Length: 224
Image (cartoon, rainbow, N blue to C red; front, side, top):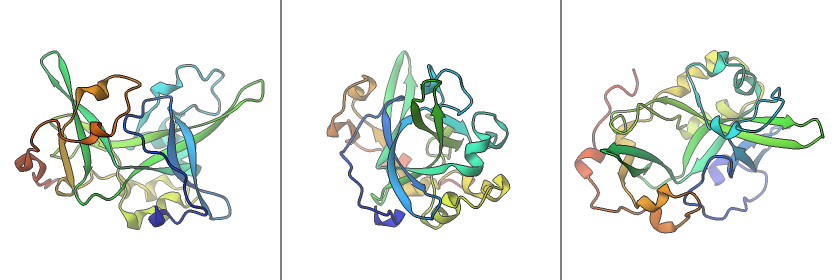
């Protein structure tokens, strides 16, 4: 976690199946420039919403249109964050089944997903901080599973993304390109991850031999 230049060492416990509405770790920059690791609800609650019920549905935001959507545009200008993760799951529809796949960086480094966060306050004074993950078009490795994927940030983009002085959405658009396929690996994992509440280290291990020919598929359109 040194790459994020946090003001204090993070206190993290491993999680292998984080679901919407649950706490998730995010890195964000404070007004003074220091960075902290916080735990926010996954599922953004806009500050102007009267009732936080159902907010778990806002777990993702399209990067191409976030700057114009009422739920996300102010957060994109002033409340950006990074969600560190070892990887993420995506599901392939095979007949009536949903087959889970695990996607991670080929070199084993921590992924840095671009996110937005918000602070909501109820009429009774209750404060809830929440977040969402930005998505972009899927690269060639993942498009067979889904047409979208998280926006994954390269290390050199962290300063730009977290800088609270930058509020021009057009300056951030270059960060929303699909991550290169040849830097990712995917494989099928246990269907146990399909059950809410299950949380096991074995969920990120291959359930069958890794399909290296597929994993090495080069994405020629990643920089278009």
